[in-house]
Amino acid sequence: LTCSPFPCIGVRVASEFSFDIVSRIDEQELDNALNQARKEIAGRFDFKNSKTQIDNDDKTITIVSDDELKMKNVVDIVQSKAVKRGIDIKALEMGKVEPAASNTVRQVVTLRSGIPKDKSKLLTEKIKSLKLKVTTQVQDEQIRVTAKSKDDLQRVMSTLRDMGFELPLQFVNYR
Image (cartoon, rainbow, N blue to C red):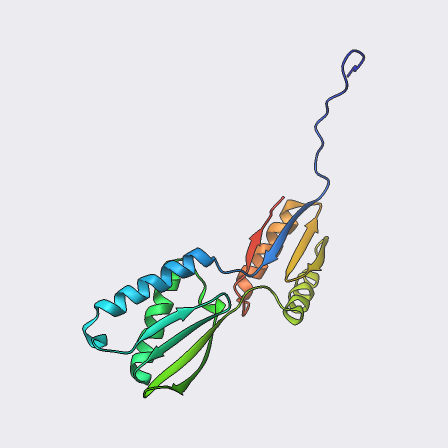
């Protein structure tokens, strides 16, 4: 390889590969699922003249309905629409059904997003127990896994998928 008249142009091979473990909810898909649930409830005969409503903000979904039976039906509808839109049910933390105004009941569903510090520790311990040549680094509410071998990273991913962790996990930024 001679480089006299031109600068040498070489291909740099990545010495390490990495990916990030995150726990996120696609906001647009959640919004679509809730709109579909609202539409289905509006069209159902058993919800005619009902005070049922579904409201949401960044962190919670608030469901109000006439009684506990209707509340259970609304929750089932919301969950089924979420699953059809690719949202993992583990991301929805169901609160208690509590009495609300005008003889209605309310349930607040908390949206789980990000991996808390205590859960990050569990995941990194699980990864280390595999005894692979990988390093983990906790960054805010996500975990970066780095290795020289793509096969090791693939093994970490498949192990975490099979683990059935209590939070929905996604693997992003695979490099």
